[in-house]
Amino acid sequence: MDWIIGIQRAIDYIESHLDEDLDYEEIARKSYSSSFHFQRVFSILCGYTLGTYIRNRRLTLAGEALANGKSKVIDIALKYGYENPDSFAKAFQKFHGITPSMAREDGAKLRSFTRLSIKITLEGGSTMNYRMEEKPAMALTGIKRRFSGVPFGEAREKQEEQMFMSTRAAQMLLLGMTSEKMTHYCAVSNADDEGYDFWIAAPLDAYYTDNLNNSDVMGIDGCGALFGFERIEIPAATYAVFETEKSICAVPEYNDIRRRIVSEWLPGSGYQLADTPEISKFHLAHRPHRNERYNEIWIPVKKAD
Image (tube, rainbow, N blue to C red):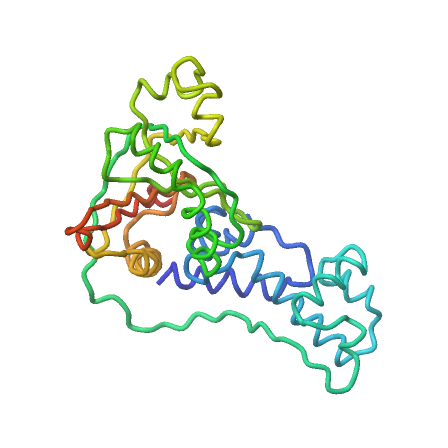
């Protein structure tokens, strides 16, 4: 219950300070958690970032102020955190579809992004199988892209599809350089209001790790340079590991499990999210066993403060 009360306290604090500078650390303190934990839980539950929520709420109120009052555009822009009319007009038109001056006209159509409100409902009562694992430090090598939105949010599918389809050769090469031939890893790191880093990667065998960019061993330009491989160092961490059911495609269930982890399992677990990359381990299977595929979800956690 403290966790639910904490989220509502944080939302109430945001709403009462939308016309002021908002400090994410202070917002998180209202929720009895760290800034990283609160922002990650918020984005998983809502499907958008904390910054997106604040921006959309401010633009909603700005639209109402323009439609109902006689305040100058510059005054409303400054009130809701925009330093100049141009940046405000650009954000306003992107959100509402009309310019600030058009919002003053009779019959102007504006968008409304409603405030969040926590409602207590009966959830859970279902089984979630998991295991706690202490993972040593590890290094993955692979392809990195910077995605917009939140990890595994609405924009995820199109971005990932384009990445997976355009990097088939690199993926096959990675599988050839790892002893884990029937798995591949995806990692999420550096998530913020602007987006996140997404990796398709693998733990390479030592020979390839040492010689990845050695042109004498791996080719004229070296495979690392040729395919744009990068290395991500993952520190030792505690993970709560969940598995999807076995099926041909487990991604839809994967997204649902992540939401259930933070809404059902995490609040009573005694843990909070840790600032360590989140890992997805995909277990592959060839015909006729493709329905044996499943995903492991490695959620990095630490003991709650």
